[in-house]
Image (cartoon, rainbow, N blue to C red; front, side, top):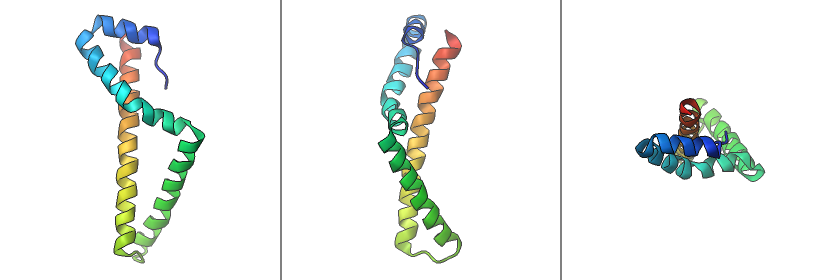
Amino acid sequence: MEIDQIKLQQYISKNPKQGARVLSQLGKNHQFVNAISDPVGQDIMRDAINQMEGLLEKIVNEESTDAERAEYRAYRRILDRWTERINKYKTMVDEVNRTT
């Protein structure tokens, strides 16, 4: 999900205002994309998902405590945020690639 620098430059020169917005979004969200590409980031993500699965099973079986439900919600918010940021990055990359 990398962006070609030449295409990005062409996009910015054709669409200066839109290009500034795209560049800003790419910069804000690039770290999240890098994190899931990195082995350490992948391990962290895998651990969070495994933890969520265990907590969800307890919640579904009505065996969870208030603390476990809160922990599940916290993991969910974090993963939702990561997903949103990665999707924004992909959308910006696709926009640049589509219009150049």
